[in-house]
Length: 130
Length: 130
DNA sequence: TAGCATTATGTTATAAAGTAACACTTCACA
DNA sequence: TGTGAAGTGTTACTTTATAACATAATGCTA
Ligand SMILES: [Zn+2]
Ligand SMILES: [Zn+2]
Ligand SMILES: [Zn+2]
Ligand SMILES: [Zn+2]
Image 1: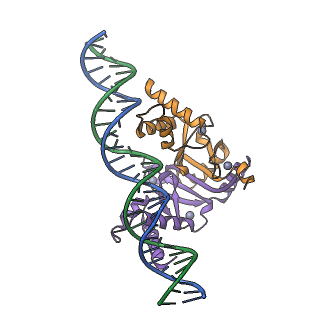
Image 2: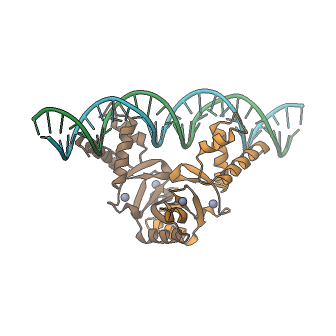
Image 3: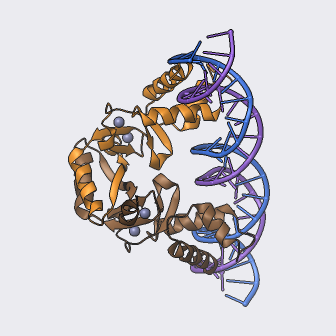
């Protein structure tokens, strides 16, 4: 919340936005070491946690990596398409699909709170170059 | 493929089947150290990789952990319900849902190959005890 | 069956990812 | 200005995972 912290989060968000694909926390760390020589892992992880909590960043679970949000806060409905060729990650919202998924797990009395929907494959440009 | 390896895989699968919830690779490792004092991480990771490739085990991406397959080989259509209360992971197949998801990502020319669908929340018994 | 190539497996050592615990800073409010 | 709550940073460490190489099993050739 303070200036220092918010600035760190803004820098990390900028780094993630510039990136082509997802970045690991340590990718981010090494990138920041140019401007912040003494930065340590927890600083990055703290900032990523704060950014994730406010929906500005998502962790890509199946890549152990992070992306800047591309869906402007509707991240609870997000589907990630992960290209295993070029590493790009596209985020799109799919309210209907998430609703169906919730309904499906609720059939057994399960109470859903957070959805992880990640699809690996090839993006259109990688699959045409295959 | 050889006897030694297949036996290791069978043991690991048995350990995972006995477990209540998902186990980390190191949980499995420590469990096996009782019977195999000199076992090392790559042995476990190799076996888990082989078991995963043949669909007998799944990695729960959002838990960095592993479960024995509960769906008998139809794992490409699986949805995991992960209880954050008691740690149980239930696997159910949802062909229709996966088909819809594939259709959704294909709208942008993406070619899906592997689906990760994990829902966090509370199982029926944990949510009634809440 | 012996010799050799091929593949699978195990071991050592190390890298990558993540976090606990505590010290420090900031800022609101008395 | 003090005091405390909240947030942030640092040190040191744990957990997760893999590269590289050594070893062992398998199956083919002769
Ligand atoms: Zn988003
Ligand atoms: Zn691509
Ligand atoms: Zn399965
Ligand atoms: Zn539960």
